[in-house]
Image (cartoon, rainbow, N blue to C red; front, side):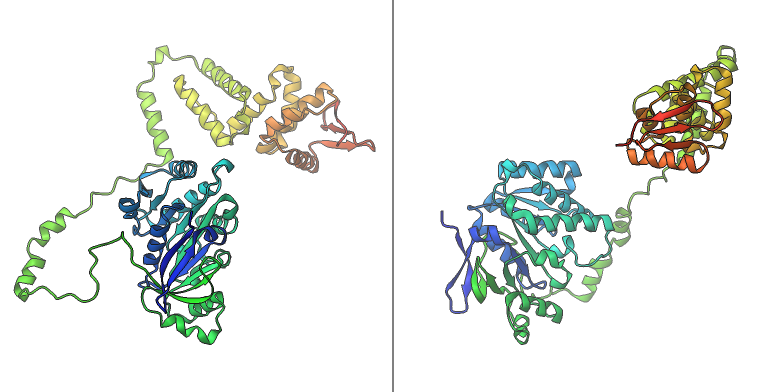
Length: 486
């Protein structure tokens, strides 16, 4: 298959060819101010290579959906899909080698950026067996690879810069050839622009952009004025896929696009001033009334208000006084619910607020009416239940709880586990029990926990030369020995 296309003609009228196979390995940067013919150039490149290679177009302005009519591209409306669906679409595009236009015109700027970033990342992360060659065209690339932080959120900027950098720096091995087009070179991230080996530079007027364009074309800076004098649709080309020396190119015609666009001047309507005024003002109030947006929805109620309404509804539907369980039975059932919750797998690794909300939900489900423990009281009861102190004699349990009065709420559960084991005279620290009580699976956090408890004077850690450690709780007779540290 012939891999060359004609994108236009040179100053001498000779055709200027573009090697698509070489482009797949070297990438392309297009630059030109608004009105320089940048979108026309991209359209010519896409039309001429449509039968040779898969094409993916990131289109923030809605300029390229017309490719579907002439060349069979699939138009994807970015506003119609959820983020997970956009990623799934990108994976299918690579699998089935579909040429598509991702139309982002219906989204706000930051939504456009996030949608394009997720789409490009999913293209990049496709399975190895789907690494088919594809041209990936990103129009208005300064939006998706900004040189400096703008008005978008910092996490959005990091996401889109990562996606664009992967496309231009590492995309070649995955078959992705990036083609980025920008109005301002100075606004485009340098690490994205620097990865391109082919350049098509259109008209630009700002000195900083002209100097950067001249540097990329290998021209002397005094020759940069040439870029300012380019006519619309004319570009300076350089790169292994086009030419080895800077060459002026007039881009050829296209078959798709806006056919009815009017260029130049157009005569004004021959309407009398009074008639024009009537056209502008007649029925204006009625039209404005129709255009009034619907009233804003009421503000979202606060969490406290929602909980209060739920509690009031439950009170209205609660059983009569005679059928309610006795106060002692309610307190007993609350303790049982906390014990059941503490025994569940994974519950210890949730936040205290999530544990407390689960507890309240279960109490309401059983229509328990009575004084509920507050957040601090729940955390203490939950820690006691998790350490299973209920199996100990009452005197021993009270003694451990008395020692735990000085312990911070967040450290109470692991301290109780240590104290119970120390009293039982166990010889090995139960790392799993400590991890569940502390809500972590990190050995480093466990070590820091023990160091902190020792600094607080709540435990004593003794380590011998063999690496064995013994944990003791002051006030308890027995000690707890640890295995040798690895």
